[in-house]
Image (spheres, rainbow, N blue to C red):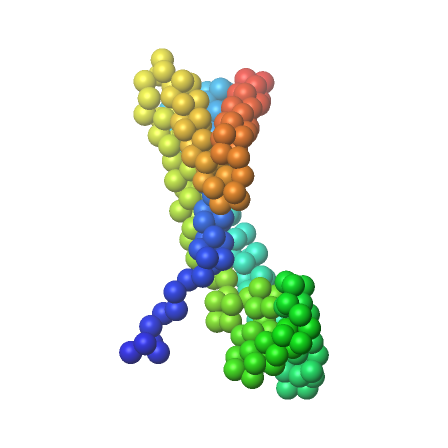
Length: 228
C-alpha cells in the first residue's frame, strides 16, 4: 500500500510552485492593468475595454504558464542528467564519490577520519541518494514538476489580473479610476508580501516596491492611451 503512495513534496518543490505563482500573479497584475488603463484612457467604450482586458488576461496567463513549463522542464532534465552522471561515477569511479562526500563533511568541520567513515557508511547504504544530495542538493525521486509550476503560474496570473479587470468594468464610471488604482494597490501589496516571505526579505520594502511599480505602470499606460 505504501509503495503506491505518492511521495510527499519536498520544501524545494513547494517553494518552486509558490515562486511560479507569485511571478505569474505579478505579471498578470501589471500586464492586464497596462492594457486596461491604456485602452480606457483612449476610449470610454466599456465593451472594448472589457474585451481588451480579458484578451490580455488570457494571453498573459497562458504565456506565463508555457514559460514556466519550459523553464522547469529544462531544470528537471538537468537534474535527471546529473543523477545519471552520478550513477555512472558510482559504477566506474567509486573512490572519487567517496572523496566528494568526505570533503562535503570536512567543509562542515568534521575531521578527515570521521568524514571518511561517514562517507563510506552512507555510500554503502544509500550511494546514489547520498551523492546527488551532497553534490547537487537534489532529493532523489523529487524532481521539480513543470506541470505544477505551469498551473500555478496560469492560475495566479489570471487571478492577479482579474481584480483590476473587474474594478475597471464593474465600478461606477465616476469611480472607475479610483477602483482600478485601489485594485492595483491591493494585489501588488499581496504579491509583495508573499514574495518577501518566500525570499526571507523585508516585508514592508517588498510591499512598497510592488505598489510603486504598479502605480508607475498605471501612470505610464494612461499617458500612452491619452496620446491616441
